[in-house]
Length: 435
Image 1: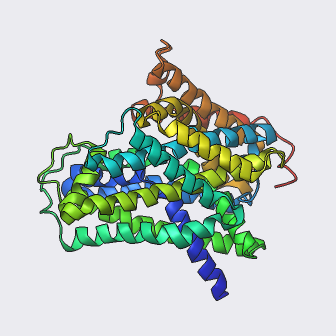
Image 2: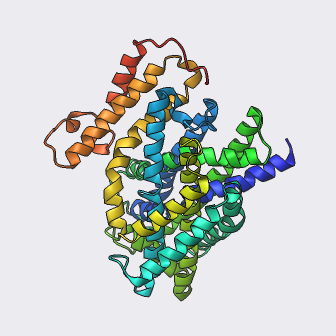
Image 3: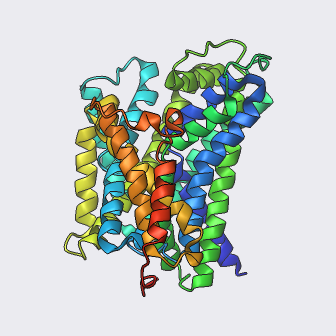
């Protein structure tokens, strides 16, 4: 194995970590530790597997199905039109409609709330912050070939170093003793649901394309080189996330004797870092969170530019899309975090089950020669999730509550299985010739 391949894979792995670990991911592990108390490690493992495990599984599925550098991505077995529609919807949701504006809004809320600035409503401070934040993000994403290296060389060290400092402090000088009382009636299941709800697996689908392009730009073109380099990069990102999530869960557990369960998740993270570092925590947390959010923002802006440019077959240039996405996200971020989530959440709720179905089936891609299994199972999942969204909007359909696992938000599993079995009996001549 060439040392240059390992080195480059480590660099890209650090960038992948920064892409996946946004500021939103900071709030869940401490809260899991707080409510789990003595069972904090069980909660951490369950959360990690449902969040990072699924994201890395998505990348592995793309590798096994040889589609990681295909513009249709893992959706290619659905057919070109359906695949591109799914990928466009995913890109828009994890891009300018939700995730990119949320990075700026979240960074402002966590960084400036301790200084007395409100994240609600429009203010001069928020507008100025969004102009600077998205201006820098757009500049860093402007050159497609250098984007991953910029994240890995400049943003990742600050992000990794900052969170490792917090984790080390949590273990070396814990805030207090871990409570003997478990304040969650089902630690394992609730932690799994928290990881499931992060939706990081959808981001992994498009980040896989970005890291492959970065590695191909470094000269790793062959199938074996791509599999090896992406595999190493994924393991590096997974290992970093393991250490940091573990430390943040323990940090929350060390406060389990003091803080009430009703503590807000966002406020908890700020409070815990304040307990560790005192008055210096305000500046430290502002720097770490801003860099953390900016790394994710740069990656998502670049991902949006890459995909839409390919989708338009070059009619829309990468750079013009990057600039447009940055400007759009800057404006939307000032609408407020709650409004951003309220707009895009139903679309994510609709798409996520179908995405998970395709990922699971892609793990067995070489053994499934009938594309209709993919298509029908995905339709079944989307029908169930679509009904869920309509019912949440107030339509008196009263269907999904009768489906198994509805109380856990997994009512789509049985319809996906039933429709997939139906697809098995509707034969398709063969897999696409491009596969």
